[in-house]
Length: 141
Image 1 (cartoon, rainbow, N blue to C red):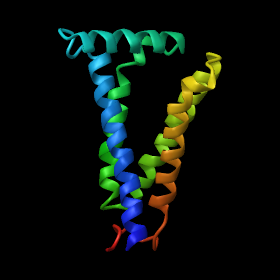
Image 2 (image 1 turned 135 degrees about the vertical axis):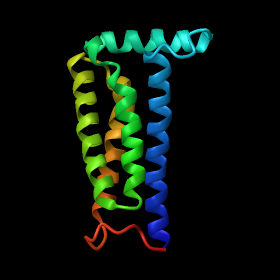
Image 3 (image 1 turned 45 degrees about the vertical axis):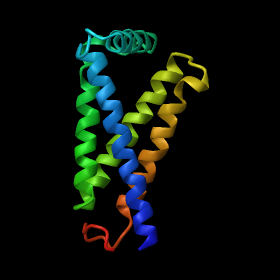
Image 4 (image 1 turned 135 degrees about the horizontal axis):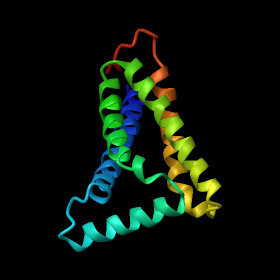
Protein backbone atom coordinates (compact mmCIF):
# COMPACT_ATOMS: atom_id res chain seq x y z
CA UNK A 1 0.00 0.00 0.00
CA UNK A 2 2.86 2.41 0.79
CA UNK A 3 4.49 1.75 -2.59
CA UNK A 4 1.17 2.38 -4.38
CA UNK A 5 0.78 5.67 -2.51
CA UNK A 6 4.30 6.73 -3.54
CA UNK A 7 3.52 5.84 -7.14
CA UNK A 8 0.33 7.88 -7.09
CA UNK A 9 2.19 10.79 -5.49
CA UNK A 10 4.91 10.70 -8.18
CA UNK A 11 2.27 10.65 -10.91
CA UNK A 12 0.20 13.39 -9.26
CA UNK A 13 3.36 15.52 -9.11
CA UNK A 14 3.85 15.12 -12.86
CA UNK A 15 0.20 16.07 -13.44
CA UNK A 16 0.70 19.18 -11.31
CA UNK A 17 3.92 20.16 -13.09
CA UNK A 18 2.27 19.79 -16.49
CA UNK A 19 -0.76 21.77 -15.33
CA UNK A 20 1.50 24.60 -14.15
CA UNK A 21 3.60 24.47 -17.34
CA UNK A 22 0.48 24.41 -19.53
CA UNK A 23 -0.93 27.39 -17.65
CA UNK A 24 2.30 29.33 -18.13
CA UNK A 25 2.30 28.39 -21.83
CA UNK A 26 -1.30 29.54 -22.20
CA UNK A 27 -0.53 32.91 -20.58
CA UNK A 28 2.63 33.37 -22.63
CA UNK A 29 1.46 32.09 -26.00
CA UNK A 30 -2.24 33.01 -26.08
CA UNK A 31 -1.75 36.63 -24.98
CA UNK A 32 -3.56 36.06 -21.70
CA UNK A 33 -2.89 38.56 -18.90
CA UNK A 34 -1.08 40.97 -21.22
CA UNK A 35 -2.36 43.86 -19.13
CA UNK A 36 -0.06 42.69 -16.32
CA UNK A 37 3.70 43.04 -16.17
CA UNK A 38 4.02 39.32 -15.48
CA UNK A 39 1.93 38.45 -18.53
CA UNK A 40 4.00 40.67 -20.80
CA UNK A 41 7.31 39.37 -19.44
CA UNK A 42 6.22 35.74 -19.78
CA UNK A 43 5.25 36.34 -23.42
CA UNK A 44 8.57 38.04 -24.16
CA UNK A 45 10.53 35.29 -22.42
CA UNK A 46 8.67 32.47 -24.21
CA UNK A 47 9.08 34.15 -27.59
CA UNK A 48 12.81 34.75 -27.10
CA UNK A 49 13.33 31.18 -25.85
CA UNK A 50 11.41 29.55 -28.70
CA UNK A 51 13.07 31.85 -31.25
CA UNK A 52 16.49 30.79 -29.93
CA UNK A 53 15.45 27.12 -30.27
CA UNK A 54 14.18 27.88 -33.81
CA UNK A 55 10.82 26.34 -33.01
CA UNK A 56 8.30 27.25 -35.76
CA UNK A 57 6.01 30.11 -34.74
CA UNK A 58 2.99 28.57 -36.45
CA UNK A 59 3.18 25.52 -34.15
CA UNK A 60 3.70 27.27 -30.81
CA UNK A 61 -0.02 27.37 -30.06
CA UNK A 62 0.17 23.59 -29.56
CA UNK A 63 2.16 23.74 -26.33
CA UNK A 64 -0.74 24.47 -23.95
CA UNK A 65 -2.95 21.99 -25.81
CA UNK A 66 -0.33 19.25 -25.47
CA UNK A 67 0.24 19.99 -21.79
CA UNK A 68 -3.47 20.13 -20.88
CA UNK A 69 -4.24 16.99 -22.92
CA UNK A 70 -1.40 15.27 -21.07
CA UNK A 71 -2.88 16.31 -17.73
CA UNK A 72 -6.19 14.77 -18.79
CA UNK A 73 -4.57 11.57 -20.10
CA UNK A 74 -2.50 11.06 -16.97
CA UNK A 75 -5.47 11.78 -14.71
CA UNK A 76 -7.54 9.22 -16.64
CA UNK A 77 -4.64 6.83 -16.19
CA UNK A 78 -5.33 6.73 -12.47
CA UNK A 79 -8.55 4.87 -13.31
CA UNK A 80 -7.45 3.11 -16.50
CA UNK A 81 -3.72 2.46 -16.68
CA UNK A 82 -3.45 1.98 -20.48
CA UNK A 83 -4.43 5.64 -20.97
CA UNK A 84 -1.75 6.71 -18.51
CA UNK A 85 0.79 4.50 -20.22
CA UNK A 86 -0.06 5.89 -23.67
CA UNK A 87 0.01 9.48 -22.40
CA UNK A 88 3.31 9.03 -20.59
CA UNK A 89 4.84 7.40 -23.70
CA UNK A 90 3.75 10.44 -25.72
CA UNK A 91 5.34 12.69 -23.09
CA UNK A 92 8.61 10.76 -23.36
CA UNK A 93 8.60 11.45 -27.11
CA UNK A 94 7.66 15.11 -26.53
CA UNK A 95 10.49 15.70 -24.07
CA UNK A 96 12.99 13.81 -26.24
CA UNK A 97 12.12 16.31 -28.97
CA UNK A 98 12.50 19.18 -26.49
CA UNK A 99 15.98 17.97 -25.52
CA UNK A 100 16.79 17.64 -29.22
CA UNK A 101 15.75 21.24 -29.89
CA UNK A 102 18.00 22.42 -27.05
CA UNK A 103 20.92 20.33 -28.32
CA UNK A 104 20.41 21.60 -31.88
CA UNK A 105 20.51 25.18 -30.56
CA UNK A 106 23.79 24.31 -28.79
CA UNK A 107 22.30 25.37 -25.47
CA UNK A 108 24.44 24.85 -22.41
CA UNK A 109 23.14 21.87 -20.40
CA UNK A 110 21.67 24.13 -17.68
CA UNK A 111 19.21 25.47 -20.29
CA UNK A 112 17.64 22.09 -20.81
CA UNK A 113 17.81 20.61 -17.34
CA UNK A 114 14.05 21.14 -17.00
CA UNK A 115 13.40 19.20 -20.22
CA UNK A 116 15.70 16.40 -19.04
CA UNK A 117 13.96 16.27 -15.67
CA UNK A 118 10.53 16.14 -17.31
CA UNK A 119 11.80 13.42 -19.66
CA UNK A 120 12.94 11.34 -16.68
CA UNK A 121 9.66 11.97 -14.83
CA UNK A 122 7.64 11.00 -17.90
CA UNK A 123 9.68 7.81 -18.29
CA UNK A 124 9.05 7.01 -14.63
CA UNK A 125 5.32 7.53 -15.22
CA UNK A 126 5.46 5.21 -18.23
CA UNK A 127 7.11 2.55 -16.07
CA UNK A 128 4.61 3.04 -13.23
CA UNK A 129 1.59 2.88 -15.50
CA UNK A 130 3.05 -0.31 -16.98
CA UNK A 131 3.41 -1.99 -13.60
CA UNK A 132 0.57 -4.02 -12.18
CA UNK A 133 -1.36 -7.09 -13.16
CA UNK A 134 -1.84 -6.14 -16.81
CA UNK A 135 -5.61 -5.70 -16.46
CA UNK A 136 -5.50 -1.93 -16.77
CA UNK A 137 -7.21 -1.69 -13.39
CA UNK A 138 -6.45 1.22 -11.07
CA UNK A 139 -4.13 0.93 -8.09
CA UNK A 140 -5.54 -0.82 -5.07
CA UNK A 141 -5.21 0.43 -1.55
